Length: 321
Ligand code: PMV
Image (tube, rainbow, N blue to C red; front, side, top):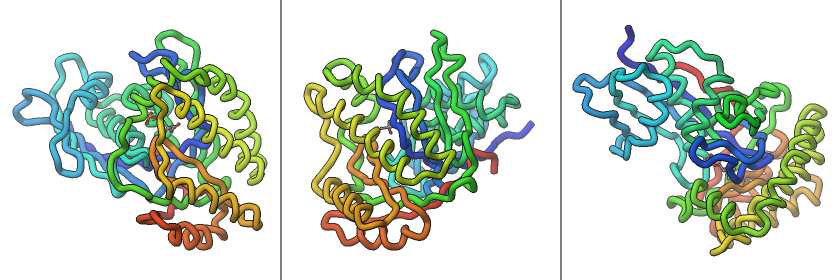
């Protein structure tokens, strides 16, 4: 039996957002979501059997972290009373700053752990397990374009991700404007819970998601950039509107975030195929056709307060190394 396994996974960015749960304990989303998987923002995770197995250990970028969330996911894959593990995880991009490091992290973890424990599951089944670490992680099991289904079963067996198209179907590019390298003030988990509990707009937001999913799927199938731009920007702004209306209101944006949104809108008005999306943090992700990526990157780099600009094409799903 192997004593370690390594997997890699790309981060993903939702074009139709997930924000809210139907079951907090099982981490079941209140609605579906739709995402693109990124090639260049990646996590590599090694799971090794610990020689002196007192408890699981978790190292992120070489630093020891609380292993409890990792143990919860490992327990879904290892035999009862099975061996404890050491998990080493490294991101090639800023961690915990709204760049979906938990998504690529948990996706790589379940692929590596399943292999180590000899559990033969497909990407769909592994997505059900990854979701219990972080809702967005289920989507990083698949490459290209991916839809997450909320499902209806109380136990969440039908709450899984589905690959829609490989990256080659429509090779979009993403330009990420990093406006703050620090960790975000409110995690997406806490932000969602607060929005659900206090925002008068929460229900209205959730009710719009199925319609947005249908529009986005259709736009992607037809490679209709304008249609995808419209639904993706609307989804991101509605998600943030529901969060802004929480009590106290969640303000994930800074001045540079706002400047980037205006710049992207201006570029599109001038004929450049680009749209924005924003997660639970101040970074702006500009999605564009490949021929526009250079122009978009130059424009965003010039904005006051933008610290760094990353570029990435779409990439494959989580896989063993
Ligand atoms: O599953 P989490 O805790 O990573 O939450 C993801 C929330 C958003 O990134 C804001 C939206 C999304 O669908 O990825």
